[in-house]
Image (cartoon, rainbow, N blue to C red; front, top):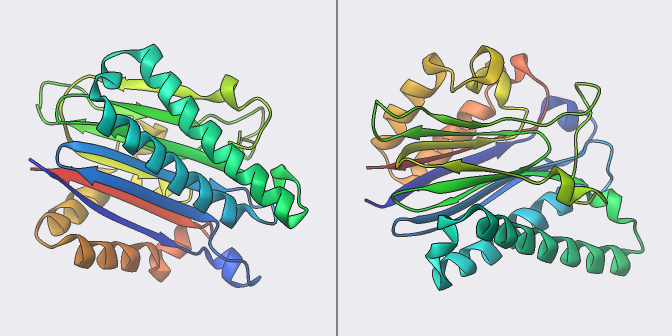
Length: 251
């Protein structure tokens, strides 16, 4: 069973009013049963974070996708997978450093968080720096879902970035040991309406009708519909932040 991926980003009203572009980005690569997907959220205080999010999402997805195509056994071992995720992030950081040098800018001006998933039909891994959230719902009703939770600092609006000096200390990997039927990755702007209270799982009144519709249409139509949901005035009424949601279905 192949993956079907639906994804969209919507600019928050707080950014539209100030003429600031969407600072979120997503990227994915699906090859049969293999999937790599990434969502990044640029720091609102960083002047070039929209570029940082795009570079990180694209680069990490590409490098990890190449790694999995070369050796899917990397998914069998935590140390091996963490090393591969670190390599992909380091490659993205190198691209940002080169960009910063060309722009005569600081690396921190490209600050972005990262939440991603890499896996196949049987298992996978979340990899995560900062906020945002990932949810993997198992194919079997007997297997619990897995949630990769956000990491915030001392204050609720403080988090950690791929561009930070301590990025390795804040890189977290989390095993998904059962086959996944439904995967969701999102920036923190989507969490207030897509996650349940306490962020223990997806908010069923939101995700169930959305997933039923997505399962009935192609990826392009589904992604356009998802964008419409994220860019709806009712959604903007819940949060004025940028919103990115990536949903991957198997079946």
